[in-house]
Structure formats: C-alpha cells, structure tokens
Image (cartoon, rainbow over all chains, first blue to last red; front, side, top):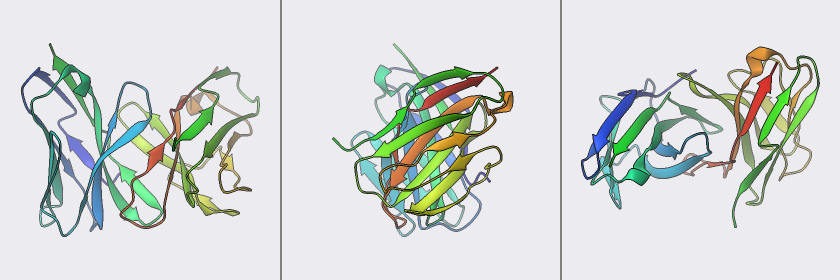
Length: 110
Length: 113
C-alpha cells in the first residue's frame, strides 16, 4: 500500500530558483523522511523529521511537517543542476516498513 | 565504507529460468528489505526481514522468495521469472526503530523476456 503521495509529479525550474514539493499521507506517523534518487540509482536519505517537529533544515533543504493536515513539504533553495533527481517521501507505516510515494521528478535547467 | 551491495546490477533472462539477486550489507543492520520500482508506482516492498531466519511478506510478494541465513545477506530468489517481474529492484537495510534512515543498494535492473 502506498502511504505517501508526492505532488507535483514533475517540476522544471531554472538554476538558482527554489523547488518545492509536497507529500500527503494517510495514517498517523512517528516520522517522515525524504529521499533523493538520481536516475535509476539507489535512494539516498536526505532528512528525517519527527512527528513532534514542525520544521527542519539541512543545508539548502527545508522540510515542514503538518500532522493535522497529514502533509509535508520539501523546499530546495538556490537549486543547482546537481539537484536534478526524483524525490520521495517515506513514512513509517510500521516499525519494519517504510512506505514510499511515487515521487516528484525535479529538473533543474542551466 | 558503509554500504549495501547488490549483484548483478543488470540482468536479462528468459521466462522460467530461476535466478537469484544477492544483497549484502556491512553495517550490522537487523532489518533488510527488498523493493521493486516501476514507473508511476514508486517503491513497493516485496519482502522484509527483521533478523536472521525472520522474514515476512511485503506488499507484492507473489513470485518471489527470500532467505536470511546470515545477518549481512538477504538474497532475492525468482523461482520462475515472468515478464511482469521486469523491474528495477532495490535492497535496503536499517537499524530497528522508527527514527533511523534506510540505506539502499545501487539497484538491479531485471528484464524477463
């Protein structure tokens, strides 16, 4: 079952612009994680936000979490060509299981 | 270097020919999982293991088998592959508990003709 759903499915921006993507989920969570996947490669963990946190920063990444709306957003500031990738949110449906959405594909144009 | 390795990275096979995709991690993680990734469907969990000799079905286990005889290894077995198992497969591992990131292997692209 797919817990998280990202929006939009695809995003194209100019280098230097900000990219924002959203994730909605269905059930209560302990935390929410964001991962990046470069074309056809393994996913890489970006950031984890706990259910009692509202906002978290890591470098050019800013993640927010609204548990009342069951939604999260990932903001990438001052985007670079190297940010071109697919981004996935993941929720801990159970301790042994992370459920992933279908992802947002971000293209950063030079 | 902490990593999850998978082999082979690419595989083209024919319907019905048994195959095994190996997965190994060097982080002493208890939890390991196999996922398949298909366009528009995200990652779907095939099987997971919570420790040696403890495995269970994920969301899409039909047509797959796994084993966990050693903590570091978690092979995925396709006894009789079919074309609908053509996909990109990922092995992953992590520490138990809900506040730990998951480490992914580089992926195995399987084509079944």
